[in-house]
Structures are given as C-alpha cells and as structure tokens.
Amino acid sequence: MIGLPEWHPIAVHFPLALVLTGAMALSAARSRLAGRHAAALATVGTWNLCLGAAGAIIAAATGLAAVVHLKMSPAAHLAVALHVKWAIFTSVGLVLLAVWRGAGNAQDSRPTWAFLAVLWMLSAALIVTGYRGGQNVYRYGLGVAEAAGSGVVLPRQ
Image (cartoon, rainbow, N blue to C red; front, side, top):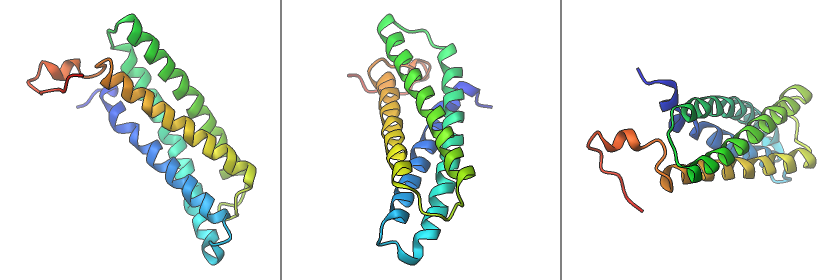
C-alpha cells in the first residue's frame, strides 16, 4: 500500500483541475452569453469549487505528511516553507470561498462580480502554489531521491 506522503503528487492535481474548471463555469454563468444555461453552469461551477476546496485540504494534508520525511538542504527548506505557506493560505481561502458559495447562495444562482474576483485571485494563488511545488521537485529534487535508487532514470538540470 502507498504511504500518505506518496499520495501528494496524485492529490495535487484534483484541486487544480476542479477549482479552475469551477472558476470557468461560474464565470460563464455570470456572462450574458450563458442565457438559459446559466443555472446549469452555476451548479457545475459550485460543485467543482466545493470538491476542489476539499481536494486542496487533502493535498495540503498529504504534502505536510511528505515534508516530515524529507531531508533537505537549507535552500530547499526555504523553498518548501514558502510552498507550504502558499498552500495553507490557498486551501483556507478556497474552503472559505466554497462555504460562501455553497452555503450562502442557491447553487444555480449567478455569482456576483465580487465573488468571481476573489475566486480568480485564489485560482491564481493555487497556480502559484502548484508552480512552487513543481520547483521543489525539479530544482531541488525533493521527493525523487528514493526513485533514483530504484533504477529509474531522472533528468538532470
């Protein structure tokens, strides 16, 4: 069975895909072009946002579990600390936004412009979080040291 730290590379893809898809669907629901499909787009966007927020919490938990087992240089430690700060900020923000959308409105109602602005800012923060995590892997080789001894050929930079 795969241990909790090894789930992090899998878990991070769900919030990225779900939140960004939800942001696009909710933005389309707000547009004038949506017309009769606005309610369906709003419902899809609401569900994607709520599931993406739950996925962000799971990704943060698996990431924190992975950090515990890492041995890293001081430079890598600073990079991981910054990634963790972005992840916590973004995860908490997404949960609050999902509660705002899921509990504060009917799921098929059009979102407000203020809600969409916050949603796109948190989507950008989620992308930055993912980028920083990718840099931890590709720049510092974090999480791939065990694979190096298994005969897997890893690219060098």
